[in-house]
Image 1 (cartoon, helix red, strand yellow):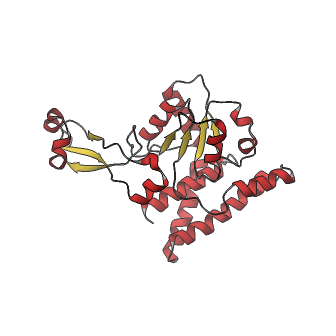
Image 2 (spheres, helix red, strand yellow; image 1 turned 60 degrees about the vertical axis):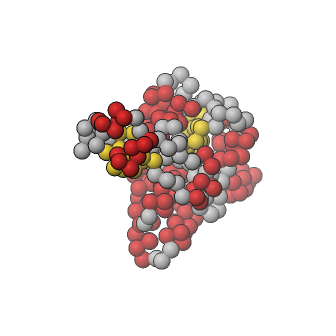
Image 3 (tube, helix red, strand yellow; image 1 turned 120 degrees about the vertical axis):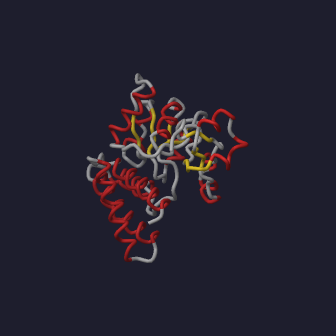
Length: 244
């Protein structure tokens, strides 16, 4: 199973299962990803296996959410929670008050979007049908029907916390493990490169101290088309002064 399918499955199952506050969340997500891996071993198409498993998990989530909802809310849930697995997008969507948190989530290995200039209605419209989770400190936003019902996956982050405390809170609530860090500026993934290949792009001191470097992995065109905010910023950083 290739990395993009794995990332997409992890993102989708986390978003679905968080709607019903599944605990422990990460173990449940990992169990479904493992089911997908086993299914792809005997099926020719990973997309077909993912769609089949997504439909099953979505059905279970809808059943639980709808068990205490009226007919109108049931129809809303069935309409707004995508019947087909959405394409790979951002793991988290941070509203205008959580720009710092978006950077720390990237450092923890997650693809986090920051929306500094967007009103609530537009943000919620962007979230509908998304596989990601909305993060906000706006208590009024969580009174909206799409969030209160579970049609959109979201987590209210206490406004009193510092940026690092916000990260600790989100990791604890969503049972998030640390993953290889992404660029804090753009969310791009790093790969190891020989320093000679990027000599003209780094300061002389960095070149002299570092034996190897991390450079951002070039994003394929389909990813950029789906997520224009995902274009990487060209960062390069040392693995460590004198590191092997």
